[in-house]
Length: 343
Image (cartoon, rainbow, N blue to C red; front, side, top):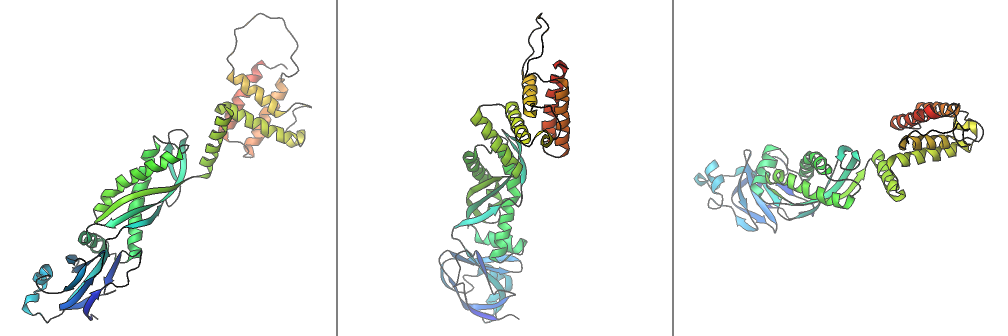
């Protein structure tokens, strides 16, 4: 049931509150002569029948037909100044909000100029202020039916998220997670430029967007660590993978031939076979030279040993110890080595 409101104000504004409706629910009966008290960084917007009408800025105001021209003409207040009229008042704060939160709801798969495709999450803050209170009330309250600060925060966060995925995808085409500091600065500026128009359309000025953290997904983090290791060692990808395979093989050998998964022969390690196979695949064949037949050197692997290494690769692939891409690459090199290996 409507109640008569003689003093309309928002005295207990909290530090993070954006809007307050008077009354909290339904309509209030307001009459000419009622007092409207608007404190600093507040604007009081009168709202009726789905539309924001008159607005009052900072100060104490006594309602009259003179300062409520739109509302007066709408409901004919001039005919009876004593008759209460139903309306709501929205107090909107115009101060700057400096620590509004945003974040991707999950991992995004986007291009990376160095790593190819990566998975990442991003988090940050933004600052904003209500620049047009009447437009804000018309668009947010009138169109969206939102009139609490919690709902408005969720709504604004949704606007940010609607732009973030496309912005991050476009920026990452020319940037990489390997250059994180520059990436964060570029993302903040790009998100602000993209979302500014959406905020302006509802009467809000988006002042600054900050990217606090870009967090790579688990697989992407492994790729970044691998890339850093390659740079520190001064090796290319093939050399790095060969080194990793040899290290894993050496660890398996510590448990004996049975621990390696297959028998390779006494004193012969999988790492040695793979290392030579990879090296053979990376080396250009030299022109054929006439030469005398000779016995295989002690470190040359036989066909049987290479076939055993291939079997080991099959087992490791089946057990999920290596990726299919690694399997294909190493198997191809072993095949090439098998062509020239002695019996």
